[in-house]
Length: 135
Ligand SMILES: [Fe+2]
Image 1 (spheres, rainbow, N blue to C red):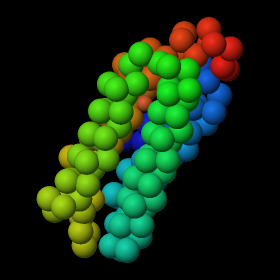
Image 2 (image 1 turned 90 degrees about the horizontal axis):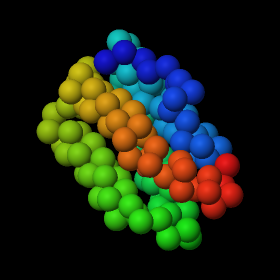
Image 3 (image 1 turned 180 degrees about the vertical axis):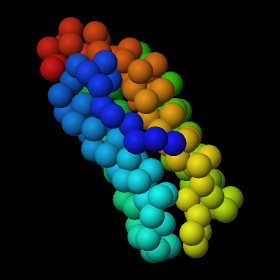
Image 4 (image 1 turned 120 degrees about the vertical axis):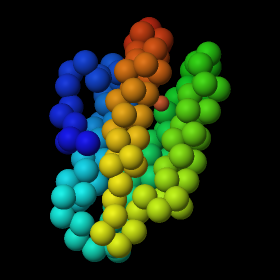
């Protein structure tokens, strides 16, 4: 997995969500970079925990907005967010992380999920929130 460079087409039209997506992307990029160094197990574990904690925080902020504005794809969003956290945790339990291990499969999943979710799912709220006056 290569470092993912943010592009304007990733923008979901809500500044706060873009900022959070950028931070999440930076945290995933930090993990991708770590695979080439494999500093030590504790560093890797901390990076992963921080990333999943932040993803959780971001998902809650996004779902809060959806609830506030009665967004009709809130359930689909919640399901996808939940699946991301669970899948990431199951990757970690299945030997994808360990001494000198940060598997390509895990990094591939993280990067692909984030970009796929932003482009396919989050992008669908762009027009909706913009119409509600959110920028
Ligand atoms: Fe989302």
